[in-house]
Image (cartoon, rainbow, N blue to C red):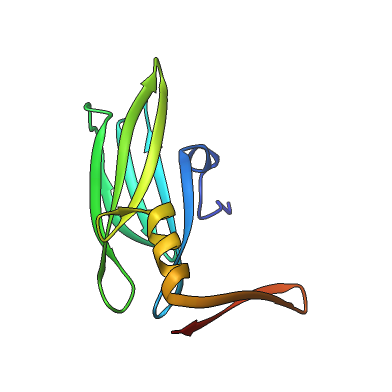
Length: 125
């Protein structure tokens, strides 16, 4: 019998997805956090970078590298209240929002749509 290469349960553990524009292009970072299983999985551009099972400490951080320049990225996991968690991504020690604000000051960026696909054009200053 045919079984699909994924499980439905797996999809529900994705808690955050970020698109990060680096000098070599835009990278997708996905984070799975199974609060019941204690699972933490980090994917960069669809490739598994970190997998930890049975992490009973549900808060903390995961650090990994992104892109050709091996840019340091950290996902911070914080408890907000009860069973709610907040996930923040840091790039080179800056929150993603601050990183993107800094980057927009040093580069000109346009997003254009071609045949239904968004393309980002980045010119360094």
